[in-house]
Length: 485
Image (cartoon, rainbow, N blue to C red; front, side, top):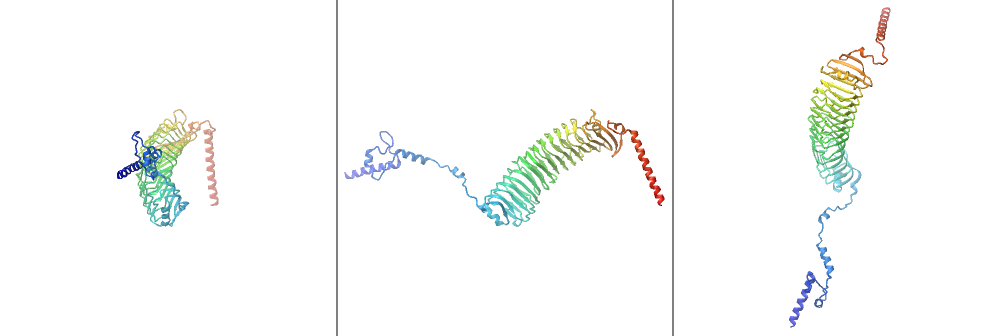
Protein backbone atom coordinates (compact mmCIF):
# COMPACT_ATOMS: atom_id res chain seq x y z
CA UNK A 1 0.00 0.00 0.00
CA UNK A 2 2.84 2.36 0.81
CA UNK A 3 4.36 1.68 -2.61
CA UNK A 4 1.06 2.39 -4.31
CA UNK A 5 0.69 5.70 -2.42
CA UNK A 6 4.20 6.80 -3.36
CA UNK A 7 3.60 5.94 -7.01
CA UNK A 8 0.30 7.83 -7.03
CA UNK A 9 1.89 10.91 -5.44
CA UNK A 10 4.75 10.83 -7.99
CA UNK A 11 2.35 10.64 -10.89
CA UNK A 12 0.26 13.58 -9.60
CA UNK A 13 3.32 15.73 -8.93
CA UNK A 14 4.85 14.96 -12.38
CA UNK A 15 1.61 15.81 -14.15
CA UNK A 16 1.32 19.12 -12.32
CA UNK A 17 4.95 20.08 -13.10
CA UNK A 18 4.53 19.24 -16.80
CA UNK A 19 1.33 21.25 -16.99
CA UNK A 20 3.02 24.31 -15.55
CA UNK A 21 6.00 24.07 -17.87
CA UNK A 22 4.07 23.47 -21.08
CA UNK A 23 1.00 25.56 -20.17
CA UNK A 24 -1.24 22.83 -21.48
CA UNK A 25 -3.40 21.86 -18.42
CA UNK A 26 -7.05 21.74 -19.48
CA UNK A 27 -10.07 21.46 -17.21
CA UNK A 28 -12.09 18.33 -17.99
CA UNK A 29 -15.43 20.04 -17.52
CA UNK A 30 -14.87 23.47 -19.16
CA UNK A 31 -12.07 22.53 -21.59
CA UNK A 32 -10.20 25.66 -20.36
CA UNK A 33 -6.66 25.93 -19.06
CA UNK A 34 -6.50 26.46 -15.32
CA UNK A 35 -3.96 26.65 -12.53
CA UNK A 36 -5.21 27.95 -9.20
CA UNK A 37 -8.87 26.76 -9.39
CA UNK A 38 -8.04 23.06 -8.78
CA UNK A 39 -7.76 22.67 -5.00
CA UNK A 40 -6.61 19.07 -5.24
CA UNK A 41 -3.76 20.06 -7.54
CA UNK A 42 -2.66 22.76 -5.17
CA UNK A 43 -2.67 20.37 -2.26
CA UNK A 44 -0.50 17.84 -4.05
CA UNK A 45 1.83 20.39 -5.72
CA UNK A 46 5.37 20.53 -4.31
CA UNK A 47 6.06 23.49 -2.07
CA UNK A 48 8.66 25.04 -4.38
CA UNK A 49 6.42 25.16 -7.50
CA UNK A 50 4.62 28.53 -8.02
CA UNK A 51 1.42 28.62 -10.06
CA UNK A 52 1.46 30.88 -13.12
CA UNK A 53 -1.20 33.51 -13.75
CA UNK A 54 -3.02 32.90 -17.07
CA UNK A 55 -3.16 36.55 -18.26
CA UNK A 56 0.61 37.05 -17.82
CA UNK A 57 1.27 33.83 -19.72
CA UNK A 58 -0.62 35.06 -22.80
CA UNK A 59 1.38 38.31 -22.88
CA UNK A 60 4.63 36.36 -22.77
CA UNK A 61 3.52 34.10 -25.60
CA UNK A 62 2.57 37.10 -27.78
CA UNK A 63 6.00 38.66 -27.25
CA UNK A 64 7.72 35.40 -28.21
CA UNK A 65 5.77 35.30 -31.49
CA UNK A 66 6.90 38.81 -32.58
CA UNK A 67 9.47 38.73 -35.42
CA UNK A 68 12.54 40.96 -35.61
CA UNK A 69 12.72 43.27 -38.68
CA UNK A 70 16.20 42.39 -39.87
CA UNK A 71 16.04 44.64 -42.94
CA UNK A 72 15.28 47.68 -40.80
CA UNK A 73 18.29 46.95 -38.64
CA UNK A 74 20.57 46.54 -41.65
CA UNK A 75 19.41 49.81 -43.21
CA UNK A 76 19.81 51.77 -40.01
CA UNK A 77 22.66 54.27 -40.54
CA UNK A 78 24.93 54.54 -37.58
CA UNK A 79 26.20 58.03 -36.92
CA UNK A 80 29.96 57.66 -36.88
CA UNK A 81 31.82 60.84 -35.96
CA UNK A 82 34.02 62.23 -38.75
CA UNK A 83 37.71 62.31 -37.96
CA UNK A 84 39.29 65.74 -37.66
CA UNK A 85 41.68 64.92 -40.49
CA UNK A 86 38.67 64.78 -42.84
CA UNK A 87 37.41 68.28 -41.97
CA UNK A 88 39.41 71.09 -43.56
CA UNK A 89 38.68 73.81 -46.08
CA UNK A 90 41.59 72.54 -48.22
CA UNK A 91 43.52 69.28 -48.08
CA UNK A 92 46.95 69.76 -49.67
CA UNK A 93 48.31 66.48 -51.06
CA UNK A 94 52.09 66.57 -51.40
CA UNK A 95 52.84 62.85 -51.37
CA UNK A 96 51.25 59.42 -51.59
CA UNK A 97 51.46 59.24 -47.76
CA UNK A 98 49.21 62.31 -47.48
CA UNK A 99 46.75 60.71 -49.87
CA UNK A 100 46.84 57.36 -48.04
CA UNK A 101 46.01 59.03 -44.72
CA UNK A 102 42.84 60.48 -46.23
CA UNK A 103 41.95 57.16 -47.84
CA UNK A 104 42.30 55.42 -44.49
CA UNK A 105 40.19 57.79 -42.41
CA UNK A 106 37.88 59.63 -44.81
CA UNK A 107 35.27 57.83 -46.88
CA UNK A 108 33.55 61.21 -46.71
CA UNK A 109 35.74 64.29 -47.08
CA UNK A 110 34.84 67.83 -46.10
CA UNK A 111 36.69 70.44 -48.13
CA UNK A 112 38.65 70.51 -51.38
CA UNK A 113 41.48 68.18 -52.34
CA UNK A 114 44.39 70.02 -54.00
CA UNK A 115 47.44 68.21 -55.32
CA UNK A 116 50.75 70.00 -54.93
CA UNK A 117 53.32 70.07 -57.72
CA UNK A 118 55.52 68.12 -55.26
CA UNK A 119 53.39 65.01 -55.83
CA UNK A 120 55.58 62.69 -57.93
CA UNK A 121 53.79 59.32 -57.97
CA UNK A 122 52.44 57.96 -61.25
CA UNK A 123 49.14 56.84 -59.68
CA UNK A 124 46.44 58.84 -57.93
CA UNK A 125 43.95 56.58 -56.19
CA UNK A 126 41.13 57.83 -53.99
CA UNK A 127 40.61 54.40 -52.48
CA UNK A 128 37.35 54.05 -50.51
CA UNK A 129 36.36 57.71 -50.75
CA UNK A 130 32.75 58.00 -51.85
CA UNK A 131 31.88 61.65 -51.15
CA UNK A 132 33.90 64.85 -51.49
CA UNK A 133 32.28 68.09 -50.34
CA UNK A 134 34.55 70.34 -52.37
CA UNK A 135 36.79 70.43 -55.46
CA UNK A 136 39.38 68.02 -56.75
CA UNK A 137 42.17 70.07 -58.34
CA UNK A 138 45.13 68.41 -60.05
CA UNK A 139 47.33 70.73 -62.09
CA UNK A 140 50.77 70.78 -63.71
CA UNK A 141 51.89 67.27 -62.73
CA UNK A 142 53.88 65.55 -65.46
CA UNK A 143 54.40 62.34 -63.45
CA UNK A 144 50.77 61.20 -63.11
CA UNK A 145 49.86 58.47 -65.60
CA UNK A 146 46.70 57.03 -64.06
CA UNK A 147 43.89 58.23 -61.80
CA UNK A 148 41.38 55.99 -60.06
CA UNK A 149 38.30 57.00 -58.08
CA UNK A 150 36.51 53.68 -58.18
CA UNK A 151 34.18 54.31 -55.23
CA UNK A 152 33.60 58.03 -55.68
CA UNK A 153 29.89 58.82 -56.09
CA UNK A 154 29.50 62.53 -55.33
CA UNK A 155 31.72 65.57 -55.79
CA UNK A 156 30.00 68.77 -54.74
CA UNK A 157 32.68 70.99 -56.26
CA UNK A 158 34.60 71.12 -59.54
CA UNK A 159 36.67 68.33 -61.06
CA UNK A 160 39.69 70.17 -62.48
CA UNK A 161 42.47 68.48 -64.45
CA UNK A 162 44.94 70.83 -66.17
CA UNK A 163 48.44 70.46 -67.53
CA UNK A 164 48.67 66.70 -66.93
CA UNK A 165 50.87 65.84 -69.87
CA UNK A 166 51.36 62.17 -68.96
CA UNK A 167 47.85 61.20 -67.85
CA UNK A 168 46.54 58.36 -70.00
CA UNK A 169 43.75 56.74 -67.99
CA UNK A 170 40.93 58.10 -65.80
CA UNK A 171 38.53 55.75 -63.98
CA UNK A 172 35.43 57.26 -62.37
CA UNK A 173 32.85 54.51 -63.01
CA UNK A 174 30.50 55.38 -60.14
CA UNK A 175 30.63 59.17 -60.16
CA UNK A 176 27.08 60.42 -60.74
CA UNK A 177 27.20 63.98 -59.40
CA UNK A 178 29.69 66.81 -59.91
CA UNK A 179 29.38 70.58 -60.12
CA UNK A 180 31.69 71.13 -63.12
CA UNK A 181 34.12 69.24 -65.32
CA UNK A 182 37.12 71.27 -66.45
CA UNK A 183 39.77 69.18 -68.22
CA UNK A 184 42.31 71.18 -70.20
CA UNK A 185 45.71 70.32 -71.67
CA UNK A 186 45.59 66.61 -70.92
CA UNK A 187 46.95 65.74 -74.37
CA UNK A 188 47.28 61.93 -74.20
CA UNK A 189 44.23 61.15 -72.08
CA UNK A 190 42.35 58.62 -74.19
CA UNK A 191 40.87 56.11 -71.75
CA UNK A 192 38.04 57.50 -69.63
CA UNK A 193 35.72 55.11 -67.80
CA UNK A 194 32.72 56.99 -66.49
CA UNK A 195 29.04 56.60 -65.69
CA UNK A 196 26.45 57.45 -68.33
CA UNK A 197 24.18 58.80 -65.56
CA UNK A 198 26.68 61.46 -64.53
CA UNK A 199 24.93 64.74 -63.67
CA UNK A 200 26.90 67.96 -64.18
CA UNK A 201 25.37 71.09 -62.66
CA UNK A 202 27.35 74.00 -64.11
CA UNK A 203 30.06 73.60 -66.79
CA UNK A 204 31.52 70.97 -69.11
CA UNK A 205 34.86 72.06 -70.55
CA UNK A 206 37.00 69.43 -72.31
CA UNK A 207 39.97 70.80 -74.21
CA UNK A 208 43.16 69.35 -75.69
CA UNK A 209 42.70 65.65 -74.92
CA UNK A 210 42.88 62.45 -76.96
CA UNK A 211 39.32 61.36 -76.13
CA UNK A 212 37.70 59.78 -79.18
CA UNK A 213 34.01 60.07 -78.34
CA UNK A 214 31.53 61.65 -75.95
CA UNK A 215 28.62 59.40 -76.82
CA UNK A 216 25.81 59.34 -74.23
CA UNK A 217 28.13 60.40 -71.42
CA UNK A 218 25.78 63.12 -70.23
CA UNK A 219 22.37 61.48 -70.51
CA UNK A 220 21.13 62.96 -67.22
CA UNK A 221 22.28 66.52 -67.90
CA UNK A 222 19.43 68.79 -68.98
CA UNK A 223 20.54 72.32 -68.07
CA UNK A 224 24.08 73.64 -68.04
CA UNK A 225 25.84 77.01 -68.20
CA UNK A 226 28.80 76.23 -70.46
CA UNK A 227 29.45 73.44 -72.94
CA UNK A 228 32.88 73.98 -74.50
CA UNK A 229 34.49 71.10 -76.38
CA UNK A 230 37.59 72.15 -78.31
CA UNK A 231 40.98 71.00 -79.64
CA UNK A 232 40.36 67.28 -79.06
CA UNK A 233 41.99 66.13 -82.25
CA UNK A 234 40.66 62.54 -82.18
CA UNK A 235 37.12 63.35 -81.03
CA UNK A 236 34.65 62.08 -83.63
CA UNK A 237 31.32 61.95 -81.77
CA UNK A 238 29.45 64.22 -79.39
CA UNK A 239 25.95 63.14 -78.42
CA UNK A 240 24.12 64.55 -75.40
CA UNK A 241 20.59 65.01 -74.06
CA UNK A 242 21.18 68.59 -72.93
CA UNK A 243 18.15 70.86 -73.36
CA UNK A 244 19.28 74.28 -72.14
CA UNK A 245 22.69 76.03 -72.28
CA UNK A 246 22.50 79.33 -70.45
CA UNK A 247 25.87 80.95 -71.23
CA UNK A 248 28.14 79.44 -73.88
CA UNK A 249 27.99 76.62 -76.43
CA UNK A 250 31.26 76.24 -78.29
CA UNK A 251 32.53 73.30 -80.35
CA UNK A 252 35.63 73.78 -82.51
CA UNK A 253 39.02 72.41 -83.60
CA UNK A 254 38.22 68.77 -82.92
CA UNK A 255 38.52 65.95 -85.48
CA UNK A 256 37.34 66.99 -88.93
CA UNK A 257 34.99 63.97 -88.89
CA UNK A 258 33.20 65.14 -85.75
CA UNK A 259 29.45 64.52 -85.70
CA UNK A 260 27.47 66.63 -83.24
CA UNK A 261 24.06 65.34 -82.17
CA UNK A 262 21.89 67.21 -79.67
CA UNK A 263 18.37 65.95 -80.33
CA UNK A 264 16.79 67.61 -77.26
CA UNK A 265 18.49 71.01 -77.37
CA UNK A 266 15.84 73.76 -77.14
CA UNK A 267 17.33 77.00 -75.90
CA UNK A 268 20.89 78.40 -75.87
CA UNK A 269 22.61 81.68 -75.08
CA UNK A 270 24.91 81.54 -78.11
CA UNK A 271 26.38 78.96 -80.49
CA UNK A 272 29.74 78.75 -82.24
CA UNK A 273 30.32 75.59 -84.26
CA UNK A 274 33.49 74.99 -86.27
CA UNK A 275 35.18 72.00 -87.91
CA UNK A 276 32.33 69.51 -87.82
CA UNK A 277 31.11 67.07 -90.46
CA UNK A 278 27.48 66.84 -89.31
CA UNK A 279 25.18 68.58 -86.85
CA UNK A 280 21.66 67.81 -85.66
CA UNK A 281 19.53 70.29 -83.69
CA UNK A 282 15.98 69.20 -84.59
CA UNK A 283 14.29 70.80 -81.57
CA UNK A 284 16.24 74.03 -81.18
CA UNK A 285 13.73 76.89 -80.75
CA UNK A 286 15.54 79.95 -79.42
CA UNK A 287 19.04 81.46 -79.56
CA UNK A 288 19.38 84.39 -77.21
CA UNK A 289 22.53 85.90 -78.73
CA UNK A 290 24.74 85.02 -81.72
CA UNK A 291 24.80 81.86 -83.84
CA UNK A 292 27.82 81.01 -85.99
CA UNK A 293 28.75 78.09 -88.25
CA UNK A 294 32.27 78.54 -89.60
CA UNK A 295 34.59 76.30 -91.66
CA UNK A 296 32.55 73.12 -91.31
CA UNK A 297 32.49 70.24 -93.79
CA UNK A 298 28.80 69.35 -93.45
CA UNK A 299 26.48 69.43 -96.45
CA UNK A 300 23.26 70.10 -94.51
CA UNK A 301 22.50 72.81 -91.96
CA UNK A 302 18.93 72.41 -90.79
CA UNK A 303 17.26 73.92 -87.74
CA UNK A 304 13.61 73.55 -88.78
CA UNK A 305 12.04 74.62 -85.47
CA UNK A 306 14.22 77.65 -84.72
CA UNK A 307 12.04 80.75 -84.31
CA UNK A 308 14.34 83.64 -83.45
CA UNK A 309 17.97 84.67 -83.03
CA UNK A 310 18.76 87.43 -80.54
CA UNK A 311 22.07 88.45 -82.14
CA UNK A 312 24.04 87.89 -85.33
CA UNK A 313 23.75 84.88 -87.62
CA UNK A 314 26.93 83.83 -89.42
CA UNK A 315 27.23 81.01 -91.99
CA UNK A 316 30.78 81.34 -93.30
CA UNK A 317 33.32 79.24 -95.24
CA UNK A 318 31.34 75.99 -95.22
CA UNK A 319 32.65 74.78 -98.56
CA UNK A 320 30.44 71.68 -98.94
CA UNK A 321 27.19 73.21 -97.70
CA UNK A 322 24.35 72.93 -100.21
CA UNK A 323 21.19 72.61 -98.11
CA UNK A 324 20.05 75.07 -95.42
CA UNK A 325 16.80 75.33 -93.48
CA UNK A 326 16.04 78.37 -91.30
CA UNK A 327 12.53 78.57 -92.68
CA UNK A 328 10.78 78.95 -89.33
CA UNK A 329 12.87 81.94 -88.19
CA UNK A 330 10.85 85.16 -88.09
CA UNK A 331 13.24 87.60 -86.42
CA UNK A 332 17.02 88.08 -86.33
CA UNK A 333 17.92 90.96 -84.04
CA UNK A 334 21.51 91.30 -85.25
CA UNK A 335 23.10 91.14 -88.68
CA UNK A 336 23.19 88.24 -91.14
CA UNK A 337 26.43 87.18 -92.81
CA UNK A 338 26.40 84.35 -95.36
CA UNK A 339 29.74 84.17 -97.14
CA UNK A 340 31.95 81.77 -99.07
CA UNK A 341 29.59 78.80 -99.03
CA UNK A 342 30.32 78.08 -102.66
CA UNK A 343 27.85 75.24 -103.19
CA UNK A 344 24.88 77.33 -102.16
CA UNK A 345 23.06 78.29 -105.36
CA UNK A 346 20.24 80.21 -103.71
CA UNK A 347 19.68 82.13 -100.52
CA UNK A 348 16.07 81.10 -100.18
CA UNK A 349 15.99 79.42 -96.77
CA UNK A 350 14.40 82.22 -94.73
CA UNK A 351 10.81 81.78 -95.84
CA UNK A 352 9.31 83.24 -92.61
CA UNK A 353 11.89 85.93 -91.89
CA UNK A 354 10.31 89.37 -91.41
CA UNK A 355 12.97 91.51 -89.74
CA UNK A 356 16.75 91.82 -89.51
CA UNK A 357 18.05 94.17 -86.83
CA UNK A 358 21.51 94.71 -88.34
CA UNK A 359 23.25 94.65 -91.70
CA UNK A 360 23.17 92.03 -94.47
CA UNK A 361 26.35 90.61 -95.98
CA UNK A 362 25.87 87.98 -98.70
CA UNK A 363 28.95 86.85 -100.64
CA UNK A 364 29.37 83.76 -102.80
CA UNK A 365 28.32 82.14 -106.08
CA UNK A 366 24.57 82.12 -105.54
CA UNK A 367 22.30 82.89 -108.46
CA UNK A 368 19.30 84.22 -106.60
CA UNK A 369 18.03 85.62 -103.31
CA UNK A 370 14.48 85.06 -102.12
CA UNK A 371 13.33 86.61 -98.85
CA UNK A 372 9.72 87.17 -99.76
CA UNK A 373 8.45 88.00 -96.27
CA UNK A 374 11.30 90.31 -95.27
CA UNK A 375 9.86 93.70 -94.32
CA UNK A 376 12.67 95.53 -92.58
CA UNK A 377 16.48 95.59 -92.47
CA UNK A 378 17.84 98.15 -90.00
CA UNK A 379 21.35 98.23 -91.49
CA UNK A 380 23.02 98.33 -94.88
CA UNK A 381 23.15 95.51 -97.42
CA UNK A 382 26.18 94.14 -99.26
CA UNK A 383 25.21 91.49 -101.80
CA UNK A 384 27.92 90.08 -104.03
CA UNK A 385 27.88 87.05 -106.30
CA UNK A 386 30.28 85.81 -108.93
CA UNK A 387 27.26 84.71 -110.90
CA UNK A 388 25.93 87.11 -113.52
CA UNK A 389 22.51 85.51 -113.06
CA UNK A 390 21.95 87.40 -109.82
CA UNK A 391 19.24 90.05 -110.29
CA UNK A 392 20.23 93.10 -108.24
CA UNK A 393 17.01 94.89 -109.11
CA UNK A 394 15.24 92.91 -106.40
CA UNK A 395 17.14 95.03 -103.93
CA UNK A 396 17.70 98.23 -105.95
CA UNK A 397 14.23 98.74 -107.43
CA UNK A 398 11.63 97.46 -105.00
CA UNK A 399 8.17 96.89 -106.49
CA UNK A 400 6.39 99.17 -104.04
CA UNK A 401 8.96 101.94 -104.46
CA UNK A 402 10.44 101.57 -101.00
CA UNK A 403 13.34 99.33 -100.06
CA UNK A 404 13.31 97.04 -97.01
CA UNK A 405 16.77 98.52 -96.29
CA UNK A 406 16.31 101.55 -94.07
CA UNK A 407 18.80 104.31 -93.46
CA UNK A 408 21.83 102.74 -95.09
CA UNK A 409 23.43 101.70 -98.35
CA UNK A 410 22.76 98.89 -100.80
CA UNK A 411 25.81 97.59 -102.63
CA UNK A 412 24.96 94.81 -105.10
CA UNK A 413 27.50 93.06 -107.34
CA UNK A 414 26.39 90.62 -110.02
CA UNK A 415 29.29 89.14 -111.92
CA UNK A 416 31.38 92.18 -112.81
CA UNK A 417 28.63 94.73 -112.56
CA UNK A 418 28.34 96.71 -109.35
CA UNK A 419 25.54 99.02 -108.34
CA UNK A 420 25.40 101.18 -105.23
CA UNK A 421 22.43 103.13 -103.95
CA UNK A 422 21.80 105.10 -100.79
CA UNK A 423 18.56 104.64 -98.93
CA UNK A 424 16.73 107.09 -96.71
CA UNK A 425 15.18 106.17 -93.39
CA UNK A 426 11.78 105.70 -95.04
CA UNK A 427 13.18 103.30 -97.66
CA UNK A 428 13.42 105.80 -100.51
CA UNK A 429 16.27 104.88 -102.90
CA UNK A 430 18.64 107.76 -103.83
CA UNK A 431 22.07 108.38 -105.39
CA UNK A 432 22.31 105.42 -107.70
CA UNK A 433 25.80 104.63 -108.99
CA UNK A 434 26.84 101.93 -111.42
CA UNK A 435 30.22 100.63 -112.48
CA UNK A 436 32.52 97.69 -113.03
CA UNK A 437 34.57 96.27 -110.17
CA UNK A 438 34.24 99.40 -108.06
CA UNK A 439 34.59 101.92 -110.93
CA UNK A 440 31.28 103.65 -110.49
CA UNK A 441 29.51 106.20 -112.68
CA UNK A 442 27.01 108.55 -111.04
CA UNK A 443 23.49 108.57 -112.44
CA UNK A 444 22.22 112.15 -112.40
CA UNK A 445 18.62 111.12 -112.86
CA UNK A 446 18.57 109.63 -109.39
CA UNK A 447 20.27 112.59 -107.78
CA UNK A 448 17.26 114.80 -107.16
CA UNK A 449 15.86 113.44 -103.89
CA UNK A 450 14.39 116.63 -102.53
CA UNK A 451 17.44 117.41 -100.40
CA UNK A 452 19.62 120.51 -100.80
CA UNK A 453 21.88 119.17 -103.54
CA UNK A 454 23.58 121.58 -105.96
CA UNK A 455 22.22 121.79 -109.55
CA UNK A 456 24.37 120.15 -112.18
CA UNK A 457 25.35 123.53 -113.76
CA UNK A 458 26.79 124.70 -110.43
CA UNK A 459 28.65 121.41 -110.01
CA UNK A 460 30.11 121.76 -113.50
CA UNK A 461 31.25 125.35 -112.85
CA UNK A 462 32.89 124.31 -109.57
CA UNK A 463 34.67 121.48 -111.39
CA UNK A 464 35.89 123.92 -114.06
CA UNK A 465 37.15 126.30 -111.39
CA UNK A 466 38.97 123.47 -109.66
CA UNK A 467 40.57 122.39 -112.91
CA UNK A 468 41.70 125.97 -113.76
CA UNK A 469 43.15 126.50 -110.31
CA UNK A 470 45.03 123.24 -110.58
CA UNK A 471 46.54 124.22 -113.93
CA UNK A 472 47.63 127.62 -112.62
CA UNK A 473 49.24 125.95 -109.60
CA UNK A 474 51.32 123.68 -111.82
CA UNK A 475 52.34 126.54 -114.14
CA UNK A 476 53.61 128.55 -111.17
CA UNK A 477 55.65 125.58 -109.98
CA UNK A 478 57.18 125.18 -113.44
CA UNK A 479 58.12 128.88 -113.64
CA UNK A 480 59.76 128.79 -110.24
CA UNK A 481 61.77 125.76 -111.31
CA UNK A 482 62.98 127.53 -114.48
CA UNK A 483 63.92 130.73 -112.61
CA UNK A 484 65.82 128.84 -109.93
CA UNK A 485 67.47 126.72 -112.57
